[in-house]
Length: 169
Image (cartoon, rainbow, N blue to C red; front, side):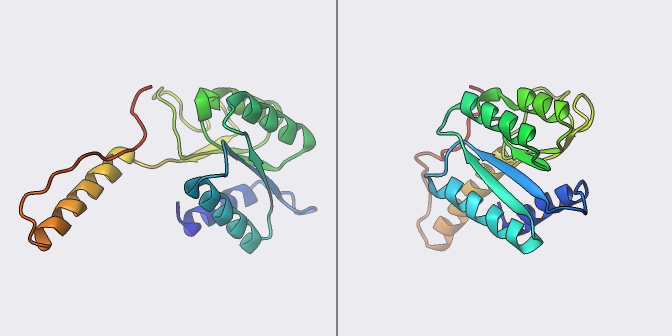
C-alpha cells in the first residue's frame, strides 16, 4: 500500500471529522512484527501526521477476538473513525460495532466473500474498502519474472511457487 493511498484513506475520515476537536482514527492490525505490517503502520502514521490526524494503532497479537474487543473499546472511548480488516472473518461484527457507535469504518487489505457485502448498504457507517487484486498482482508478477528471464537470455523459465493469500480457506 502506498503512502498516497493511506493519505486518501485518512482524508475520507476527515469528511466526518468534528471541526471543534482533533480528529482521531484507530487502525487495527493483526500484528506489527513483520515487514508488511510494520511498513503499513509506519506509512499510516506518516499519512496521519501529514494530515494532522491523531492515529492510534491497535495490534491484536494474531487474535481475532482481541481485535474485536479493541474495536469495541476504541468505539466506546470515542474514536472518530476506524480502519480495519476482515481478519479471521470478524469484519461483519466490526461493522456492527461501528454502526452501534455511529463510527465511520474503512475496510482495507481484505474483503468479504459475500458479493452482497457492499459499503453503505447493510452497514451505513461502512464508508468504503481498499483491497488489492491479489490474482491480478500474481499474474503481473509472473509475467514480469518471465520477461526478465527472457531478456537475460535464460530461455525457458520455471517457477517453483508464488505465495499469496488463498482464495478460499
